[in-house]
Image 1 (cartoon, rainbow, N blue to C red):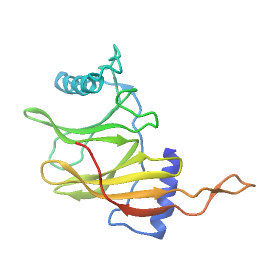
Image 2: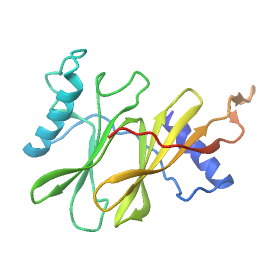
Image 3: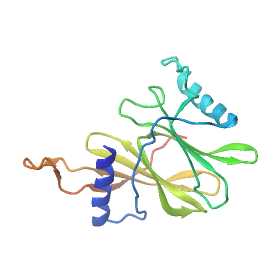
Image 4: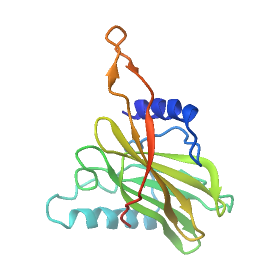
Length: 193
């Protein structure tokens, strides 16, 4: 689905141009990381919040399994970390997960973005208040992906533009390739923080 989204997005962008130019949408994979103690406590707290509902149990290795990437989103010299939830309590059955961005500062890690329903994302080249824009994609159905453009407002990332991308449903019977172009329509933004 990630490859299809990226290919479909590129097809669409040639036909219609929103204010932003999406890059490659990706999904973080689970990996073992050496994580600073302070960030580890934040990740444990986020996992505990998800598991407090009593529906799920915290896996014994939750602090060792993480889906994150250290990045430089701004030219301020600080490191940011993108974290994508893992497991049944932080992700829906369709693969949409909790999603956070933290920034390392002298006082520890501060949250820049906290949202849910993210399957794929991209870090854009465009900037708002010196920070690169973020586009997230949520799996809506077999033929729809909801895209959100998050822009930094000087303190946090905020949803600024939302789109629904619909994939063509026609398949060529000989090549088994999807034929037709994806469509993109602007929609209202609905996000939890």
